[in-house]
Image (cartoon, rainbow, N blue to C red; front, top):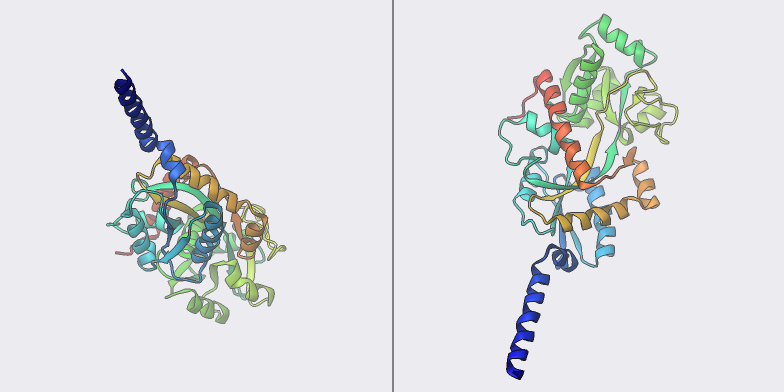
Length: 328
């Protein structure tokens, strides 16, 4: 009798322990069990890298594990995204995705080695980076409405510069043209620097630019700024109206950055990461740091972020097709 009781207790205890270890809740409690890697599909020094490192540092302090940044630049973010998609879905590999890698690339490339919807478990968006529409002072338009009227009255006569075919500035202008009916001629460059050079020289007349890169030229009156694409005015250029204030609604070409894990990552771990990363994003010091980049802090549930990505793909695919851009 005594021996049977002992065997029963051992068996019952083993069953309880087994159930605990194999349950999703236990996965979340044991997580993370090793350092976390954040893949940044861009070179060091840019805003994608700065975001990954800023979140990684605070996340490490909160979860008690090192967070390592792994820069994998190249091919418009494809190299880093593919590496993340193929990583083990255990919550120890994350990736910083953004509009180009998640919504623009599917329309830009006929063969993409990852599926933005099927290959990832979205965690939360983090930043929305605004663009500003700038022009050489020789452009005879004082505001956005006058520029649109000019683009309709003299189609194709004004040129706009970009960092290259399929770049955010390119597709932002193509979306602008689609919404307004104005027509401008695209002049692609190999990067933003030569585009700025020709804009300042008047070789091209227009450009959708990031605020930090164009701020000095705006303040020195070397270019004229028509409007910023943020929902509210930027403290960096408070005199420049938003696109909505300037009279154009429904124009949202902002670059949205967010965090994702490989598809198949346990839901409890995704929820834990969502909670921890949003805690970082809500820190006032974090928001102030990125306000200097004209970037607004954003966050949501994993489900809302997944829905956002799904909605952005057809939007940008339509713009890519209208522009005729192909990167293959």
